[in-house]
Image (cartoon, rainbow, N blue to C red; front, side, top):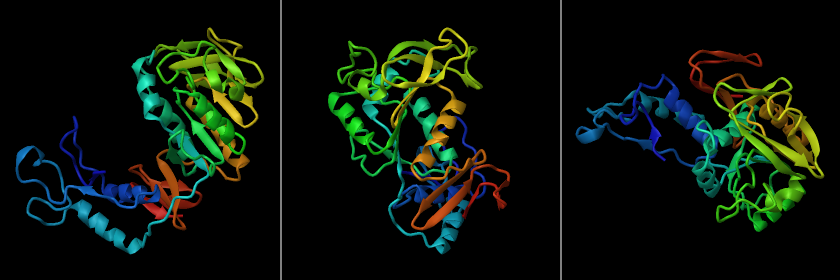
Length: 321
């Protein structure tokens, strides 16, 4: 990866990062599991198309602000060690391709949906591994699959085995396609139907000005409802064309969410960590924590200082908890 160490030159706008940003990005990379952080560039280019791209050194080879911030990190004494977490978020490029090939909404994408769940987990102060759905899931106690659209018999069996020891959360459009891109003749979920405990009944692609409700939660962009077979109905729509129809199913360790609602997703996910022995702590906007090698870093990405648990976090900075 090429870690930015100052302003870049390729974006529509290329602002100078705030003081402390390069050190913060480096700390974040380390805390999330990076064994090395590689900066681009070493020295600012003196010719061709990158002359306005910053480097750790200026054109005259004197240290730029990014260099000084990174050098100051030497005193932190960080070591290379695994990030230990009980939580996995599943990511699959084939699901990305097939999801985005037919979005059915100009505001919806695989990344939009996946990041909604990722940001909710991170806002609860939880470390998260990003793993492929077919990888070994035996060490995780909470497995979140926001947009695993592509489903096979083998993957369904793999998920069934994981659900024996872990809480699982599925997002909209889960198991909608076969490996060849077909839908399942028996309907959404296909071989995953028994685990989910229901089938798709209908979906609604909401225009930008339209929202529906689930209790106090606003739903935008996408809403799908289910016909439960063996699952319990956790939430139902309270307005719109799907009013009174099930929006969230729960069966054993498995929760299936059909609505795009940040507050609903956060409410559901916030209850899961306690079930696996973790203590969620809702972070202020723009503040995140991450732990590695016996250290827990608190990172403030806001320009202004933030007070949290009696601790003052300076703007664009990090500190040890």
